[in-house]
Image (cartoon, rainbow, N blue to C red; front, side):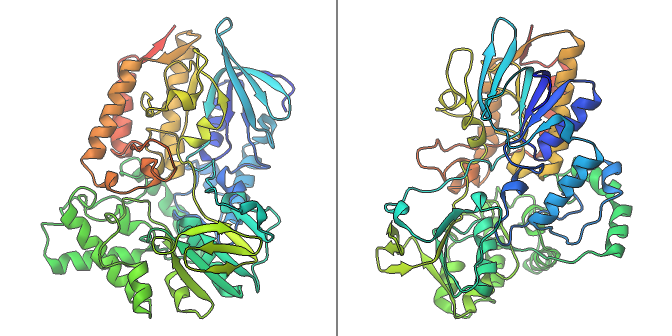
Length: 534
C-alpha cells in the first residue's frame, strides 16, 4: 500500500485499461494509485494460467501502441500464451516504473461516496483505507467467474476448478480422467491440451460453438523486425475499424456477389486465421439472415471435413445452426475438432444428457455415471457487469450498483452512471468492450476518460454525475442498434443470457469503435452534455 492514502484518482484493476489509465493520469499530473487483486499486472492474464490459455487477438495489435514499449519488445508467437502475456506486463511495469503506484494482492471491498467532502472513501480487503476524488473501475468483462450450482459438488474428491481460478502452480493432466464442462474459449483450450496427455477426456457441450482456425505461427527476429515496420500503420488503423482491429468488414453486401466470388472470399478469410472470418467478412453478416447463413454453411463444411464420425460431426457442426453465425464471440481453435478422432476423447451433449449431480468419484447424468480425477469448469463469467456489481459500492441513495441495474444497465456513453458521482468505468457495460480489441479499447476509450477528467480539473469542478435522461437516451440507442442485428437471437454473454436470472439485454455498445468515438466527440464538443458538473 502507498504511504499516502489520499489521491486524486484510484484505479481498480491492472489489465490493459487500468494500466493505461495509470500511465496517462500520471503523465497529466494526477496523484493516482492502482489497486489490483492479483499478484501482478496483466488483469485476466494473472488469473488465466490453465493449460492452453492463450490470446485470441494477433500480437501485432494486442499490445500498447506507445513506441517506447513496442520498440523494445519481441513476441515469440502470433497468438501469445498466458506466460508470455505476463512477461509482457512485467516488461511494461518496469519500463514505465509503474509498481511504485500499485498495490498488488489488494482487492477493493467497499466504496462509499462522502457527500460532505465530495470524495470516495475506500476500504480494501487488507484492512487499509484510502480516499479519492475520483475512482476509475477497470475490472474488465471477465472478472467474475460463473460456476453453476450442481448437487453434490462438495462431495467430489478429485480436483475441481474454474479455468479463471486455476491453481497458480498448475495441475498435471497426464494420465488423468478429465471432464471439461463448457465449450467456450477456455474450454476448448483446456480440452486441446488434455486430449494429448490425459487417460481419458470427456467434453460436456451445451451449445455447439462456431470456432475459427487460429492460424498460429512462431515469430522470430525477422518476423518481429518486419512487424515493427508495420506497427505505426496498424495502430492507426485500429481507430477506423469496427472492432478496433487492423482490418474491417468488406463494404460490399454478401448478397450482391456471386456464389463463386463469395466462396473465394470466405476461403481467403479462413486461411488468414484469427478473427478475419468474423470481423473481416461482408458488412451485413450480422444483419442479413441469408448472408449470415452462407457464412455458417461455409464454416460447417470446413469443420465437418475434420471429423470422421458423422454423428459427432452433427453434434459439433449441426445441419441447422443453433443460432446465427458468430453472434457469440467466436473462439479460436488449433486442433480442437481433431481431438474427437482420438480414442481417448468423447463428447457428451448436455441437451440430450443433462448433468444430474456430482458424486465423490465424478458426474452423474440422466443417462449414466462418469468417473473423473479432475473436473474443469469452463463455464464462463457474469460478464461485463459482474466485475462491477461484485464490489460493495453504493450510490448516494444507499443502493448497490447491482440493485441500481436490476432492471437493466444504464450509463452515459458507457463511462459513468447516475447517482455514483465521480465514478468512471473503463472497458465496461455499454461501451465497445467485448466487440473491441482490448488494448484498442483501453487506449481509445481510455482517452475519453482522460479528456473528461482534464475538463473537470481545468474547470475547477469538484464533482460530476450523469443525468438520467441521457442514460435513457444512450440505452435506447444501444437497443435500437442491437435490434437491427442478429445478436439478440442468441443466448450469449453479450446479452447477459448465460447467467440465470440476469436480465437479457445487449450489454455493450454494438455500433463499433469509430461510431462510439464519434458519439463521445459530439458530447465533448457540447461541454460534456449529460455530465452534470458542479
